Amino acid sequence: MFLKNCWYVGAWSRDVDRELLGRVLLNKYIVFYRKEDGTPVALENRCPHRNLPLSEGRLVGDDIECGYHGMIFNCDGNCIHLPGSETAPTWATVKRYPVAERNGWLFYWPGDPSKADEALLPDYHQYNENEHWIKAQGQTYVNAGYRLILDNLLDLSHLTYVHGSTTGNRAVAEMAQLTTELDGDSVRVTRWMEDIEPALAFRQYGGFKNNIDRWQMSQFIPPAYININNGSVDAGVGADQKTRNHDQGDWGFVVYHAMTPETETTTHQFWTVAGHEDKVPEHMRELFVEQMNNVLREDLHIYEAQQRAIDMDPKALNRDANPRGTIPADEGLLAMRRVIRRRYGDEKKTAQAAD
Image (cartoon, rainbow, N blue to C red; front, side, top):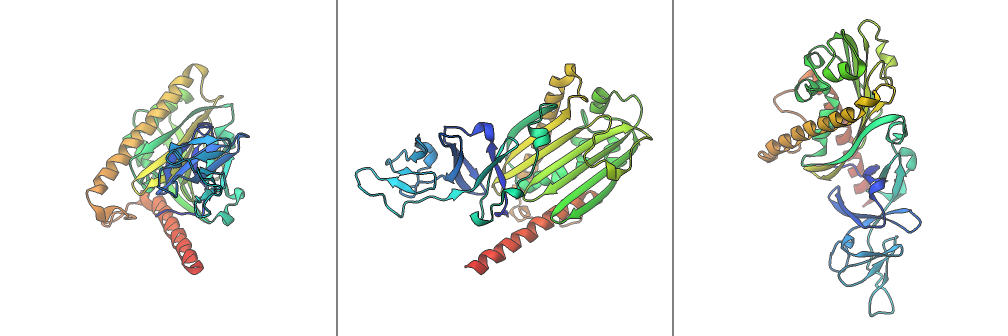
């Protein structure tokens, strides 16, 4: 179940250059490259003649020469040269996808091109590109469906059990006041913990010696973006929860994830974890980056283990929840799944009406 009329991250901008980059996204094979002037291009990655991926060919100026029979396609997806012929076949075309660049990511639009509005792009400039933030960044190939990743990031009680050596401890799961809010199609889950023992990372970087007030705010934005704000202050001086949406207090960090499905059971996960330079001492910055990378590896193990278990029971593949019941911490992820399901239904109805 993939939403189509949305921007998805296709690649980190730095990974798209004058080499052809083939990638499967939303069950479609796509090729990315840059024109000689640096403009990014995304095309269907399949020659319409004999189905060889165009990424197996080569660039000729701003065009792609198929590596099988030499047909040349321009950046609009039209064949402009057929070897041995004075004219190019008009049937030989491939789909061109709208693309846009922002904040270090190259986005593409898999749906109706007429609806590809750059005003709908998410904005992560403050953290992805700001030099005053210490960043762990990457792209992870996940052998699991994208909704399992969204589930994880909207239910941060798992920090207690998955990340207990860095950002989690018993209090994260046991002491949180939990609220879930909807703003249009956005879902925000807030966890507010008062007078709790600081987890190891909060002692290391925040220098806390006594109990703290801590907050976690996870926001889902369709089709598959998650923003997380983590903050903390000494116990008893925590501000009202409503003022902490974008504040890390005395110590904290922000997390940005963009999930782009490859297939129903595999995902490209693009991510940034960032702490402000004022809150990460210089001599600990390498440790911070390594610890945050390890947090991502710990989550990866969970996603993929879940998917293996689901694959043993095909009926479970598209379940939106455990049919036996839910727990309070599921409220946010269930709201997210309802948004996706409704939006998918709306897109399907629109497509059927157009036919």
